[in-house]
Length: 77
Image (cartoon, rainbow, N blue to C red; front, side, top):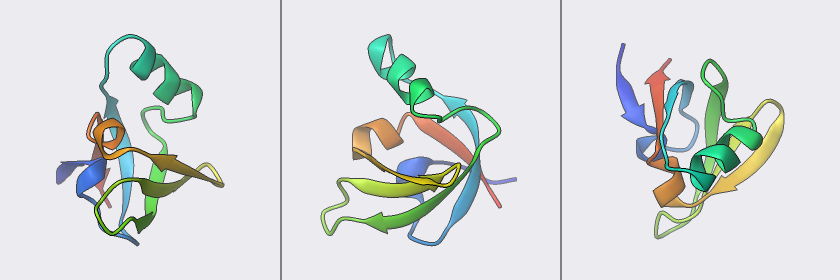
């Protein structure tokens, strides 16, 4: 299947998280927010300049900076 960074998805596209990057505190914070491997994520909205990105995961909405979203690898559905 096709793998992309979460920041590359367009609104309405879905994917399954396969890898969480980041270093130290950033990695831990992403995991604490529910971004774990195997979770389905859908991009809801992207700001006009691409930052932030609003995603839906596990029934709630989450806003991520483009830099944080680039640390998350997803497999397209």
